Length: 402
Image (cartoon, rainbow, N blue to C red; front, side, top):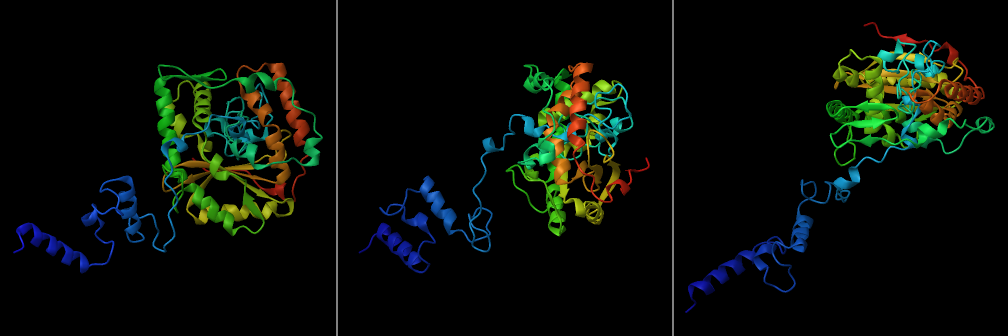
């Protein structure tokens, strides 16, 4: 007569025969061809058997395998380099000429320069709105130039013929950001306390969310960068600079440098407000051939408005002697985030990159007056070789009424 133990085995065997093979792997963990229950191999096999589209399944609904999960250590931001120092961060060059090293830079007048600096010709912000793409308003060292440094592999012959950069570039370029044990930060003669560093980090975190990047470094449909890519797909004769995703968000050190510069220029202002108004924390650059430059700018403008973005400022710097291009500042109505959009030709973009280090040194408070003059002369020499595209001078400046 079968005992209770034998009877339970018969019931279990009958149950398994009534189901598809492999649906209940846990009932046979003792078999030699099955991994031990709870082992890594066992867990992997269970995940493989989940239906496509399941949150834990390694496959999408269409059967294609999902990309590998990004490790947290791979999301660490790179150490600031010359590439991140784009013209966007150049202090406002177009500000009315005066004592500012960058005063003559067309960027100073550009709409995307920091709003605070835009109206102050004498402000010499270290990274003013020159993030890699919008360098019109500021001669900030490299704030907005992030995209510029990596996008153009080569320079036009006219730019290559320009004189080499002055020796004054070396000192500022060798300086590196330093963080204190108390959480403070220092770079290029600028300093932030631990409290101000926290303000910078919190603000940059909100910028990252508005830009659209996930914690895994990927993008979905929402966010500024996906919107810029959709606009790019509609362009017939233009495109975003290469590696746009890499430089769309200002690095922590560049952001802190800019905040420190703004605080030095406006000691009575609230640091939280200054940080929130750093419009080139998120920035983009569109490149057009000379013959399509004028029409391309307006096409991007209309597309941005159609997607719900509001124009805050626009600055045309094609008549500026040290910087050529158009910079604009926009606001994302959904998140309230300001962002910068620059418009260049291949030649103006290459010139911007070539003078990147000069721009950075001009904005540094440690650069002497004589060195600034040498650097600005170098910028004029390089920019003088950039041809003005048809209709570029007819693009008007714009500033939204307060």
